[in-house]
Length: 171
Length: 140
Image (cartoon, rainbow over all chains, first blue to last red; front, side, top):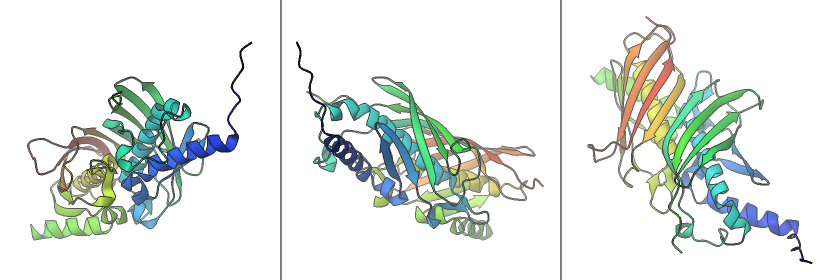
């Protein structure tokens, strides 16, 4: 009779995942500059861009700058892609991001192209985004990402991007 | 010419997000805009290489394309981005200023079509290109 491995205590699992996420987001200066944060439910990530005056692009309306929204969508897409890419190694304990120096973090996927649809005016309040990886290949990946503010069903922007995955680390 | 530079300066200074990213208008006239963005540590996307984040390049491209629409002779009101596609050809060289140049090459009663290119000091090899559609308010 095979003995099944006991599940890890929930605190251990949460601590490992949250510390890894914090290390990945914290390593990118532009994420901190815009004030973008990530929330995690299991492996699902939600990007949050809390409103601040410096994100405004149209002071008359006022409305969020299209460039802030584009960056928010791209950051969420890359983070979601990288998170999924590293997940198995993180869970297997092969990768310790918590104690890694910034220079030792895994290389990020590179954006090839990114297309943003501006569906509604970005209001002066917090924005949320979630990405879906539509194809994760060894070299290329395609990602769709959606952003909303007050209502999940009323997107204010969506985007589609293509990425080149980092070369696998040499053994 | 002096008038065009002043217009460009006023346009950028009115946009808090463009000010935050340190964008510097160079020119805005006849449906063509040039805006530069000096290198800053806050704009970095890859801490290992010091390369600027694609999102900052997107913001520069969006601002520059919008500026090109705003200074087109046929527009009488404002504009907003409908869609914008950015192609990233290569990473920008760390430490160098990025300069975007956008052209509003066609305008209908409701839509303006724009293309743009972003360069660093190696002007023979673009960092990124963009194509976009913008709304037209108050067509003359």
